[in-house]
Image (tube, rainbow, N blue to C red; front, side):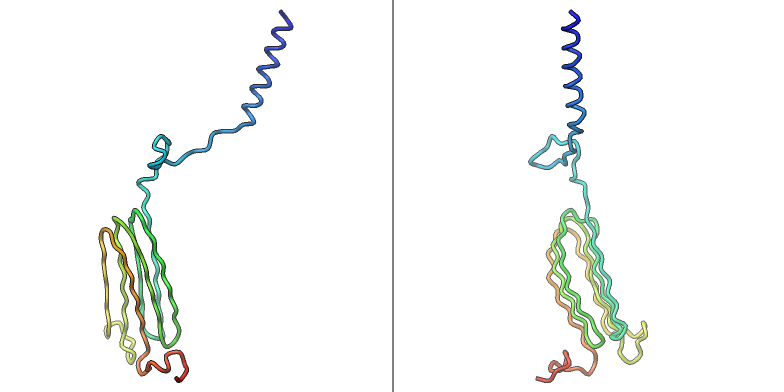
Length: 149
């Protein structure tokens, strides 16, 4: 009888120690393919904001996406003293997207002398493909990049 109790005690000790080294089960995120998982991410919202200021041109631009269920955005910015190039591609669903730019008068650079003020607001499901090129006054196409063709 004592041998049987010793064998059962040793067996419980081996099983208990193997369970202790196994560790906890990792948490699973719920999805359509695994609806039984305890944690769901359906209420996750995405946001993205970019601001650009070019003081030499008296120009500012922005993009802002807020509360989007799905968001894919790509922005290309190139800015220097004489010109600014902005390319924006974005896809979003059930959220708000805002973008715009402001260009001041080159002579005064005063906020009250606005040459261009463009603002867009998109609500819902949208795809945006926008290209903006702002060039300093007096430049022509052949010397935008400082070379003569």
